[in-house]
Image (tube, rainbow, N blue to C red):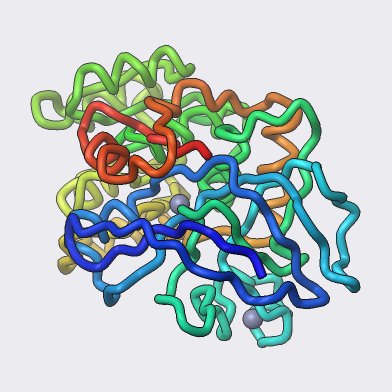
Length: 345
Ligand SMILES: [Zn+2]
Ligand SMILES: [Zn+2]
């Protein structure tokens, strides 16, 4: 039995670090010493009290760590001491969606239930137990804060690969917080030119530093004019919505070129009806789609890109906080001047 401290969200701004005992390691499981856990918007919503799911909750799903022990039949080439990223959402591998390669829609994702403990991924803990398929061995030297970002990289990879794009196309990213900024980086791996819409001047500047070719303020500037100026009047081949709510989405659709793609990456809070002129879709052959979460395939690619240095996580890591200072870490995470806050162990 392994004792671990784990972070339980009892209610808005009610975090508790509790010592609990993990169950005995199953034969296909791996015990991991957590090294880093990044604070994603999902956990931030629990902290702020705007999450739609129930308390108590064990948060932390962007996790990296060091392998401590392996079950007798664990299917992995990792050995004790190896560093890894953890895809901490559970996937059954047997449901119809998993068999179609759509394991982001696994019908049997149980949210990481451990008997006697609140539900949730539980990554804000000294130790976690994962299934062998959830462990993605990394390459040394291990940058654990970077490895903890494999999950958002894996999610954004699916987004940037959703539309049919050709090299040299222009695309627009709406909102350049953490996720928008990751879009800016990963879209460049597709060889496209990235435009940015973002109200905050500091964030626009950061996006330009990360390779966006131009940025505008949607609160003050005419987006249509801006996009036309940068696309020879043709519009962008894709709009990636990462933040800004329904008004931003509605403003983004008329910016699309023929056969343009509207890609809804972010979930919409507060939700609301979207008003779209259907003739815009018809006459321009537009595609409206969303991407949600990551698959085993995109997670594998994310870990490879991180290992090869093709993703530079330095701009995204705003602050590192030592566990168990979780209250302070969340206060920093919900502050508008941070991208990712990483809790280190
Ligand atoms: Zn996340
Ligand atoms: Zn499944």
